[in-house]
Length: 355
Ligand SMILES: NC(=O)c1ccc[n+]([C@@H]2O[C@H](COP(=O)([O-])OP(=O)(O)OC[C@H]3O[C@@H](n4cnc5c(N)ncnc54)[C@H](OP(=O)(O)O)[C@@H]3O)[C@@H](O)[C@H]2O)c1
View (tube, rainbow, N blue to C red):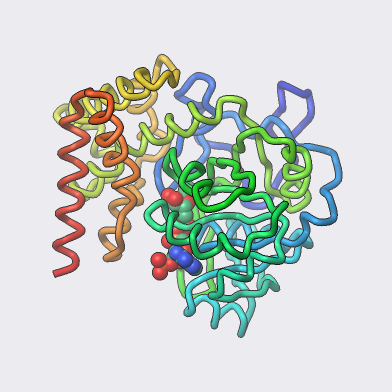
């Protein structure tokens, strides 16, 4: 059981929501997360709203229903919401035939949801969970934009720090950044496997109370963060330090930090990201370098999402991790040679896969 120190309430025991193995290495940051194997390693959500969700929130669409979209969409559907998953055809066919198979740490359930590959299905939704990889943000946002209801609210459940801004270029609606602290994967068409964590940290908005209440009614804790930009950058920094190296070295995090040469590379990556963040006025936790190394203690066997994508022959999100830092550094006149090298090498690996 986890105490909510802010409000002296207790977080309920939740399916698929477990205490992290160590306390947070990062002061002020609730959890440490790397890629698809995200797990919680610190204090959990500190706010579960008691207000009832607005009835309109019960119509929900998930744009890009893969691992994260199927998990959170599936949880909301289990909680009684009417959920439409917008997904690739193989998932659509499986889900419309047999329901969404949601295999969690504590339960396995066939969840009744509607699935389609037509982005126009966002039209009925008051709340849209936007869950494509960062590489697909512009395409997916463009596809759904003409159909989004005028008062719909969009939650961006994605890694990377500029997805909200990129979605916002296509729609007039409110787009709220959300950090995902969960690990999930699609094991087969229509079958999502939830392997850890399970809560969200969301930027503040006038709808915060209703949205947190909606998720709470589906057993998904949500914390509202007043420092969401710094939280997003902290996760970006951790992803930049671990993802590419884990992929290039085919190494789990424990092996990476055990090697002095790799620790130096990671330190350089972190320092470059810190310089960029500081130049942009984004304050990151002071102990972030030590915290970065400590993360491997919590997730020793983890292989990064970038490594997983390369193994599975998929495009990585590197251009929105180290690649993003390189572009920002260039614009600010800050050298970022280590991030540049890692970005280039991962892109080269992606090309080899295409041959
Ligand atoms: N999985 C995790 O454990 C985890 C944890 C924390 C954060 N995240 C972040 O959450 C985000 C989503 O990750 P994920 O693991 O859920 O990715 P995912 O499993 O690849 O899910 C995204 C799905 O959206 C589909 N898609 C893309 N464009 C679409 C479109 N226009 N219409 C319909 N479907 C579309 C993709 O299909 P194709 O693959 O065919 O393109 C894919 O099936 C990422 O930013 C990731 O970094 C993931």
